[in-house]
Each structure stands twice: as structure tokens, then as C-alpha cells.
Length: 214
Ligand SMILES: O=C(CO)COP(=O)(O)O
View 1 (cartoon, protein in one colour):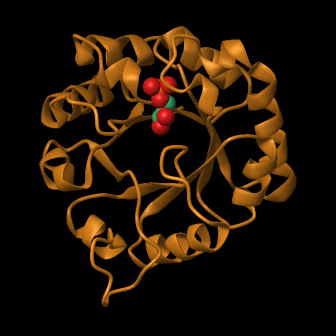
View 2 (view 1 turned 90 degrees about the vertical axis):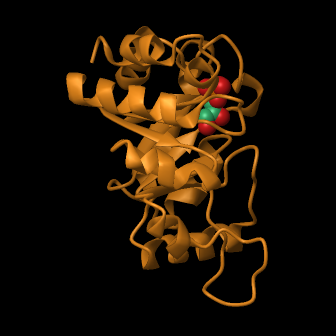
């Protein structure tokens, strides 16, 4: 299972969380990634943790003020990027172009989606992985794997029907090792989470709990 922690724009210390994640990944052997703000990518990558961007723009080098260039994100130490997060929705054509940009920069890709129908559409664009995150459960206390297990199973089936090679993650409300195990039992290859770590008083303890049963 891949555990990908999206720090969003939460007021946490990205280096403290990344250092904890690097330690937990080393000790447990579980793949743990951290997706900080773009400006924090170099400091996070410096900790040795697997470092992800939260977004890359559907552009090449050129006149694109304010964009997040995939090549710049890779230069800053990222090895992957989220796309189409529920809080940063993209047009289908732009997801496709951002996937091309990520490919050029040799970034791994996870395209987020609200539901199994969107998961099928996202999988058809050929990312490395898709992530189903019901928006109404994001930031809540109840894990998607508990609140809506069917959406995870249906997302796994929807992606497999399009392209068996695309991994499927799930996210929203995941904060414990039991939540990660429940996601795995529903067929997910990884989890995407945020507040359970970024808002934790002790991020290292939260990360240890997440990987403990794996
Ligand atoms: O949006 C998410 C991860 O990208 C999920 O957020 P929470 O883990 O806070 O529900």
C-alpha cells in the first residue's frame, strides 16, 4: 500500500512532517509520500522522503505566468504529482495536457476523481494511478472505506475495466491503520489523506499508526 499525504495549505511544518514520514517509511518499509505546497518541495525532498507535487499546470516552457511547470517541480525534487484534486478541479483536456507535462518531466501521476464514473474517464487518460475521493467525506472523521465502501470497490472495478495497469487509491477521512487496512481489503493499492497527519498534534505518531498494521 502506498500512503500519500497531501499537506494542502494546512499550517503545518512541512519539513517536520516530511522528516517523520521519511523515518516511518524507513522503519516500516511502507512507501510513504508527502505532497507539500510547491514552494516547499525542495525542503521536503531534502529530507529524503518521496516527494509529490499537489498539481502541475497543462503547459510547456513558455509564456505561462503563475503556472506550475512540471519540469520545475521535478527540478525541485518531486517524483510525482497529483492532478484534478477535488479542491483544484481541471477540465478533461487540461488533465490530459498535464499528464503529458508530467510524462515529459518523468513524474508519476495520480488523477483524483469524485466517483467511479470519473475514475473510468481518468483511467482512460493513462495515469499511473487514480484516486477516488468523495468530496463530502474529505476532511471528515469517517473514512471513505467505512462510510462508503461500495464507492471504493466500484472505483477499483471501473479502473480495471478500462486499464488493469492503473493503480487505484482512495481517500477522504482516512486517519488510522485500520482505515488503511479497510481500504486495502476493498481492493485499493494506496490511500490519499491529509488532515489525519497535517492537523495531528504528533504527525510522527499519526504516521506510525497509519502504517502499523501493514
Ligand atoms: O483530500 C484529501 C487528500 O487529498 C483527503 O483529505 P482528508 O484526509 O483530510 O479527508
